Length: 102
Image (cartoon, rainbow, N blue to C red; front, side):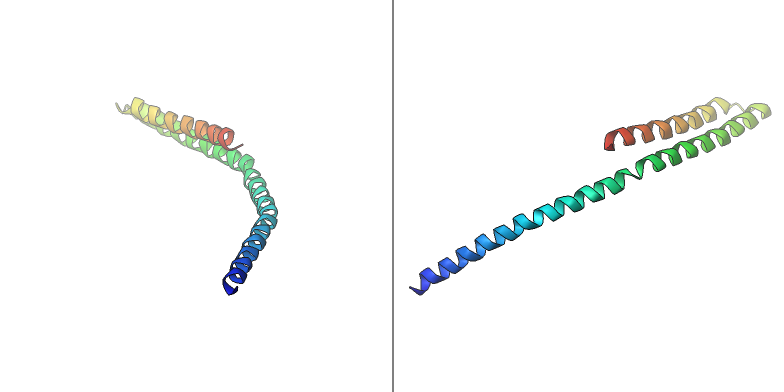
């Protein structure tokens, strides 16, 4: 008899814990949705910041390439390609990240 009461008590605890898990799921999904909305709200300012950094890097690179070209440095084309590639990478990375996560 005592064995059956232990089984009944264990079954009751299992059912009650299942109900509490279902009740907590609603709160968890609301929290996840709120966190997702907060994170996605940062993408537009972050994208604009990356574009601004790309513009500054492009300007600095243009000045460096101009200085090398003016001084007759034979390494000018490699420097121009690397700075141009860095600017393109920043713009493409910001666009792809934004489209991937939003």
